[in-house]
Length: 219
Ligand code: CA
Image (cartoon, rainbow, N blue to C red):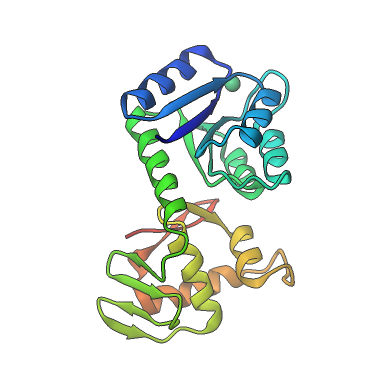
């Protein structure tokens, strides 16, 4: 059975999430402080962590940094305020896998939870699929609806990154550090240039621009 750690100090929200997840077959543990969250995430064997950013003793970013700093790579979904765009970006850069904005419908949260858990289980597949896109990691072959597409090494790496995180917004910073490593100019628009080239080759509708944040792969 899948175990989920819920880090949320507001009892009303915590119980809303807990009841919903339990009803959908998940086992849950609720904690309300950052220090408990770190302890549980590191030692508890959870398959996913839902992390509120505003906690009484510390903030969610600190919790996330400490979890990642101890080498635990459990998927983390942060819960952010609707106007917390900067928080969302910081969260993703700190190592969160996804986010849900408050207030949210339970179905939205459940969809994110299922997506992230599925993502964990498919990390060693050879072919990544998204709609009519297929990317073969072994042969480095990319097809759109069965037709071969010629990509440069960077374009391939960028598409692979997007396809490994379907439906998730990736910031330019994340794309730069994954595809170009640290040897890049942070003010560079190279990501936008490559996204434009990729769109021409695989179909513009596959890569959605999320204003002020980055890009997202759509099936
Ligand atoms: Ca809170």
